[in-house]
Image (cartoon, rainbow, N blue to C red):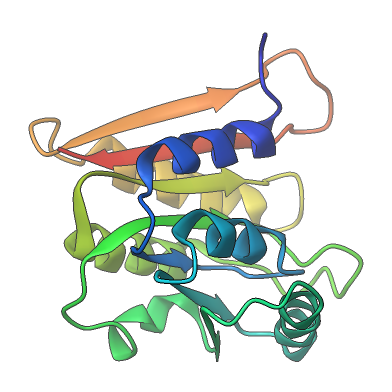
Length: 185
């Protein structure tokens, strides 16, 4: 059975991440991935959740309180600045949902330059055998530019050091989202 995009993203991370690890939600949005990661790493693990928008941080904080999650640090800053918050820790996994915050200002979007910077930073922190998952929503203004910048960057990663997978449905209308999964060898 084929899995939907978000289900497959979570499946890949759940198979890769171990209890007690530190992980990153690079775009916490409404908190869904943050909650998922919090559950996967357990109370001894930790989630660093980033977003630039007040609304996203507030939505995620509310979800964390409702689910009594205490193993998350909410960071209102660009994912491009991950290195300012996480220095020498080994990361067990990371997820990005690119594009814009659902049901909000569609002019506030993730951008290729900041996303590539964040991915590069996380790759240097990522444990061997672990994954960065990027859910690429590209059917909005600026989305295709980010998609192209990301694909260009990932295409040139050394295949001896990284595996890069693209997963998505090709017969759906309106620029369907797809997953890019990067595994550190």
